[in-house]
Image 1: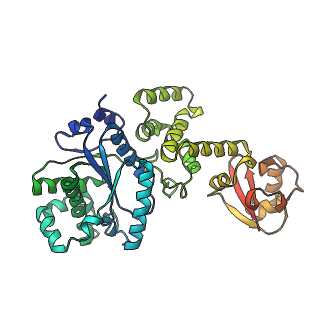
Image 2 (image 1 turned 45 degrees about the horizontal axis):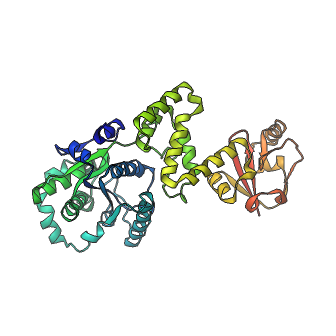
Image 3 (image 1 turned 135 degrees about the vertical axis):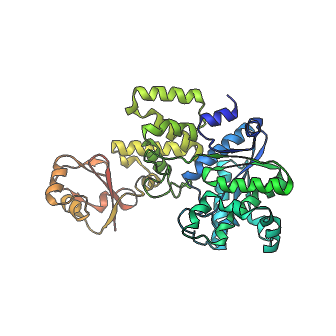
Length: 410
């Protein structure tokens, strides 16, 4: 299987540009770039499906350039519905530094990270119009899908011109670094073709590109955003345990696709895993494999082992074995409240909203359905005491099998 064939098998090629694109990909020695604007100081899982493809190309021998748009980030890529908020120069620079460090960590420093602000900041409007605007027809720009969709509601000139800025990035990297190919998500197709057109018209050269399809979950929502929040690649924003929980719960209908996209397992290995998984899907072999490969590649083996340790401790109820850091990761988004004095278990369950009434609270306690710091409590007179709290004055209450609550003693 050639590299191009493998990328197709993994579902990583949607659109292509250039008659010889298959040959270029299989050559395994081309310089290419992938870009993103620094809208936050961390990338998220939506970027990762592209980044891991970049990594795949780099492992095969291609030479990656990762562009963080310090200039284009000041304008903002047009969204389908409304204009993006303008970000300050200081915020864009701060975000650039955060993403640059993150990308270098992901690639172990074996990647060039560039900022398009470096070559756009000194270009005045007349030079831009002569060097870029002169070569791109307005009718051509109006035919871009994202621009057509925004014409009905209105689009500013800044957003309208965004595609010219990104097109110029491709031209600049082509001329200065012999970067002949661009690799992006499918939503960037219009901007990519602007760059290819500009390169052809201005310097008479052929450029290449391919896009990757958007990765969705079983409900058709963007992968990693089903809860309404992005899963950040920065482990201080999204812990490895949170990633583990998300991945281990991936739907069976999508799991083979995710293994192909997000892991470096070979086709034979993936086929074997899926064969075993289908025999006993309740064991979630494929999901566990995805979580192990994903987290290990993203944050390292220790972070995966920590995520697994937290998960097993929560499943068994043996939370007292977790460290302060692990407890923080485990209960980051768990409902919490403060407790200023020792309190009877039944009263606490009602006052904190864990149970709706004293009758329900007594039933849960009597039925061994309440655990305090990992210990089953069936004594209705049990007192929650600060002296019995675990790390950092926390008491962890579990209701049933999966619902956790954090009580912080003041």
